[in-house]
Length: 184
Image (cartoon, rainbow, N blue to C red; front, side):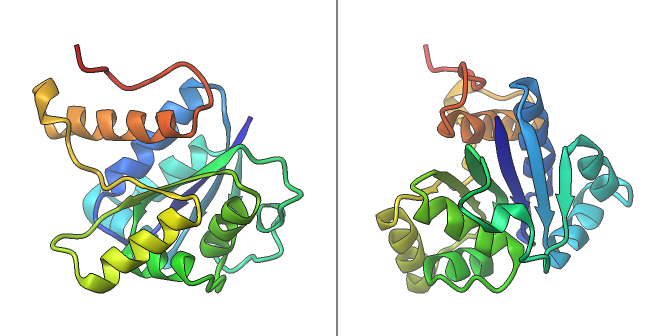
């Protein structure tokens, strides 16, 4: 099973690393695409080795401007895609079909092929433009999943909350047994 993991420039870089860990635990091959702003956010929020550590978890790494990569085509055997975190810029580009880089093109491919697309949209507060873009993506079949902690699970740390959010995002792809802790 092959999954695209897109990393855009919104705050929440730890979500990308956690999603990669959960995808790996399922045995998924990871096609990784990181935007330039995503690279910067990984460094700022995790540290200078974060992008390289994330690349090491991937099966394939694609440059953001490589729109000729296999994942830019619906013929690539991909089970779905997660964008973690998903900036409002990436959300807007996906909502309006602006396939101007590999991340947004790969997301559009998931929508046109009716595959799962999970966007961990990261912004607060939201403008009307953000909400309309979320609605547009949802109407096209995407799943907008803002990374909101499951407070009812009483996470003991920010890291625990991040792991739960990432596990839930991976679960939304429907690829295997659930990874996220369930409400009891």
